[in-house]
Image (cartoon, rainbow, N blue to C red):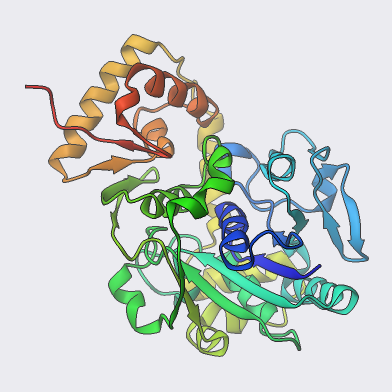
Length: 365
């Protein structure tokens, strides 16, 4: 192992980590990407992150670290994008297990450093919410980032914190992040996106999708998530900044509070106290609500009519692009229909596909 990249929030951060590796380190030995199996309810109907006991076919990398190979499978009803990522990308994906708190993840990192002596360790966050204090009104998912930040700060080895796509996760506005961002170490280009382009065709991450779109030159305002958060797509979108790790910890109140936690329950309790909520509680509530819903069927003609109405309303809000997750939820479809809806839209109106986003075009005169 030459390179270890810790995907701070899991999900799309792992995809961005693969892009980062190619951009910074080229085609040398592939990286170990340490990441959560936490795909939210769009992919995984079970709230919270998955642990090793939720998979079959994992392989030991160290006593506390399991890799997720292509043949691994989540145990139903759980879901995970990691086996498919392992099948399509050349890297080794290893599982962050947060169920033993920050102490457990620190142990995982220490074993990887001890057994493999990587030449570099990068902690990568897409969007920048790893720099949150914890009380920001726009903050929605601080838990995973805070846990990985706290663990990385415990390890007696140099770790570089990198933030890419500042503001693209819709959590902290770019203006709030500017003063904390250090020097630019890279700006992603369309060429950097090529190695993950096939993954972007199916992976549900909105922030990494917007990161790739900005690297390809897309500019405007993108609406994301079920709440329809407007996110500016600017020249700063594809930048990668180095951030001082200790300064990030001193700012992140949740990360400081959970340093000695030994269970995920303890982490959640601190999140409720400091942030006013646990995002896993949100997932629990939403999962219960979704279970009671009668899933809509995808009728193509009706769906395109609904899309027209959604687009008209989005244009009135100044929106130029949106994500397929946002469209799926705005049209009141079950997340399981996201891919079918995406295929319908692209086949019906290919000119509006700004991969991997959907472009809101001006109405036909």
